[in-house]
Image (cartoon, rainbow, N blue to C red; front, side):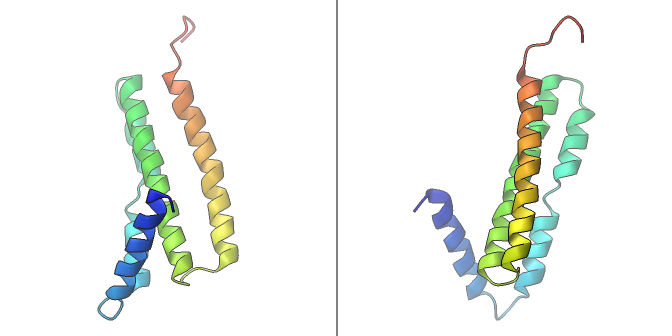
Length: 114
């Protein structure tokens, strides 16, 4: 079992343990809502250097992975249908490819035409 998988299983166990005291669906939705992917990209674009922009793109990528984890937990707890999970996972992977491409292009040396 990968380290991340073990951590996710621990989180699922914690969610189940507190299920009598909390609405887990609301908890998962609120947690995912804090992952401000677009806001990180916008903030980075407003910074003065490419390095700062790249830093915020990395923050956006981390937020995207956080959302993916929350989706996997929601699926395992049966808060999300498998078909919805697959659709959202596909969208996430597409966005991750775009984001990784943008991060890669920001790390390329500047040319004289910029």
